[in-house]
Image 1: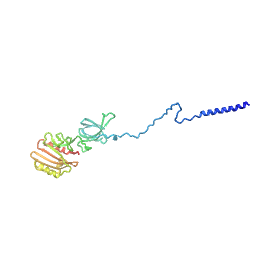
Image 2 (image 1 turned 45 degrees about the vertical axis):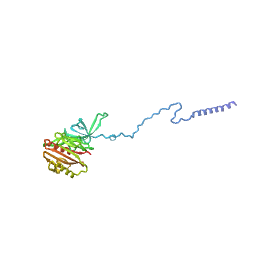
Image 3 (image 1 turned 30 degrees about the vertical axis):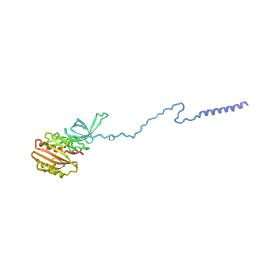
Image 4 (image 1 turned 180 degrees about the horizontal axis):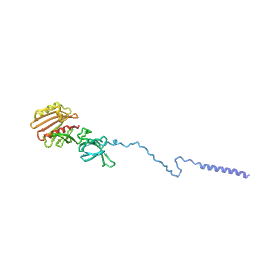
Length: 305
């Protein structure tokens, strides 16, 4: 009978061992991303992916427009197909031909006075190395001289004058008066406060410029000017053709001649602004050169207000 009890006991022990073994293998599963106790998490290898930025670099115009610089000088010549040399106050200076200026050298000759406009650009990272790029270039007395920009006039201008029967080119410098500008030749002095333009060798030769009020009366000015000139001699009013021989845009021109003296009064308009001009012309040695120079200067008068 003993052997019959032993087999069931061994079977029960086997079942118990199997149950214990199964329970030991069913530990809770680790959550994704968690590591076992006592172990450091393994480093995760990632690859950086470049992200396109939505911020654009500012364009040159957004960062600030290059300043346009006006200048004048003497044309030296063309260096190559893309650049020219101009004698300026700083000495011989090289300029690049910008867009629209490529054909400008074809209209110029060596030693021509020129006016121009350009912008400066830094070459590379060195701020000392500057590239000057022309945006306009023309002969100073040419009809193709670019108009002044924002009221800016070139420092000098060349005029053609007839002196003693010969045509000559003379250069004058820009001068500022009371609300106006004009070009003054080196034979003159100019007093901005009084508006007097006088010859250096003989100050008795002069022209005085007075800015008129916007509502000036031309008829009244003529009456007052006739009375002023009557003390010198017979007063004569010049016709339009005679006026235009001296200056443009002249609305009134009176002249009187006395003993060794001619006095004149003119009313000239420029940009809608009137100017009263008085001229004192003695009959002395300087008479020949005074007229052509003073009329050219007065005709260059430009309103600046």
